Image 1 (cartoon, one colour):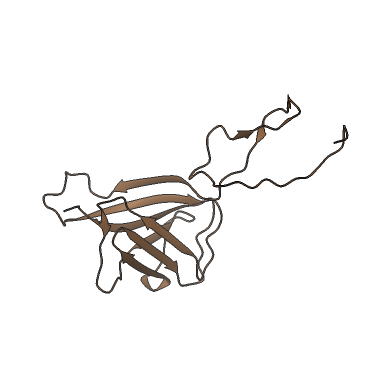
Image 2 (cartoon, rainbow, N blue to C red):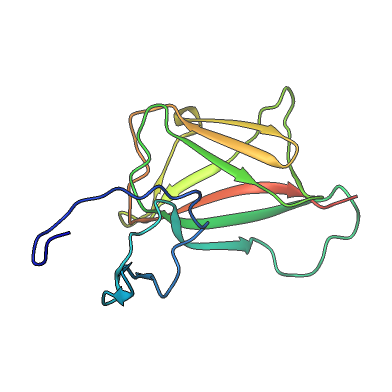
Length: 159
């Protein structure tokens, strides 16, 4: 390498973290001389995520009882429509309500405007298999990046 000359290079990352770390600084070391730490990249994922119970009156009284929950999130990038997909995985032993044939109901809203924008049921396709819920955007309305959205679903209380 020649001093004062810029070089480009490519780094292959084996895997990204699930979230961008608070201290997102990288360093480069050449021949025992470290560079100053520099800012890394934002992982293209979801931020500001919160899972909220819709009811906080108490715990379910019996196994199989439905629990309404709301996931709030911001996508780093816009999820395109039609065809964009959100996948929500619940931890074992929770599962999502199956309305029959793998269909589910989910309510998707956006805080982009006031009052909140609600996707009509025919604008999303909701399918479920146990602890995995897949929501496909069927209309031309995308999930905009950097805007808070909410996804309301029903989870079955574990047996």
